[in-house]
Image 1 (tube, rainbow, N blue to C red):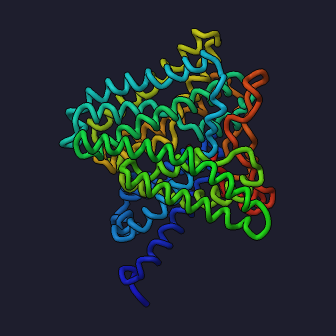
Image 2 (cartoon, rainbow, N blue to C red; image 1 turned 30 degrees about the vertical axis):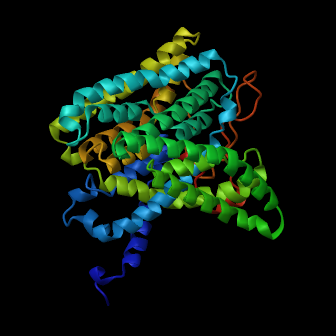
Image 3 (cartoon, rainbow, N blue to C red; image 1 turned 90 degrees about the horizontal axis):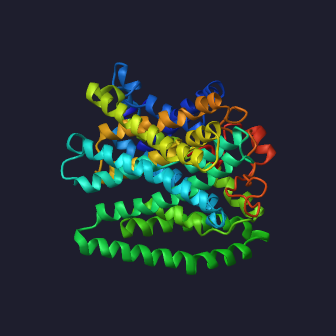
Length: 460
């Protein structure tokens, strides 16, 4: 019998994936007990498998379970799951639904992002000397950290709103619209940050921006109409199955192009989702649902790799002080930028507090951005750990605070297709009644037979 060290690498990777999925499945019941979005449990599971918890046991278990030579293969699986998730996030975010929502929504959206951007940038300026990696300029560090502070996790926000029964309320619709606007702006700023970080001098930066604009124009003017025509041709007969292969190929190729340009692969997946045709329920069933299931199986590897890069025990007292500062700035800036303007524009304090709590959720979107910063060398592993904890804590705060402020019914956010995904529609009198976020419902047979399968809105 071969020893574990002599096993083929692919066997080790398959066993690692089995461990990751098993731990996640074992923690599912915590979602029901703690009334948390699925992403909170998944981030926690990833941290548990890393040095923060498993590493405290004798035998260096994280290194034995996830050896260094197996991590590149796990990273490929994680990046595939992440690309599929970002595609779904782009597809669910329909920019057309942001039109005509009033000047007050635009003002609230700008303030809900600008205040944490400015205050987060101020905190980053204070932390630059002690926390920035060597060679990272103050401007780059501040710009990246300010963007990370200003993010609201759009998909997890949609799930919280639905499970709390806030879908048709004024505050629910307002939070969805503001989060959508803010995240679009934040991704644009992040593209600029990545372009600046990866460019070789001013000439390189101009080249990256020019290629990015060319790519965007090509996606809008050529890829979008081509997709609409091809998917219409593949809608019937034996070609129906080919549409899924076409979309996955498009996601991967788009990711390759943006990576080649120098603005990270996830932007390509997100952009491909933005140009996808919308409003076709048949398209959602044959493409959206299979991709949701695939990302549900692969994304836990991303959280585990994140956990392997974090070590809560290694923060020390100085790291805990940085965490306290980061949490203080993250929470107060979001509340100041969202709740106070909402109160000044006519909401009562309870509704304004609910709005501020919703906008404070960060989830998976924050982890993705932090991973980019770590990959580019804009932050080190200690600050990465601090910011991951901030994302976990601010998202976990949503449930208890909403209960405190009386925000919604307090329904439990179960991370399974068994909690039927409904469409989010604006409140009566808001816009044209079309959904701001499309969340396809899983088939009844899938919900009954596979209670662990999640929809794309379960994460953020």
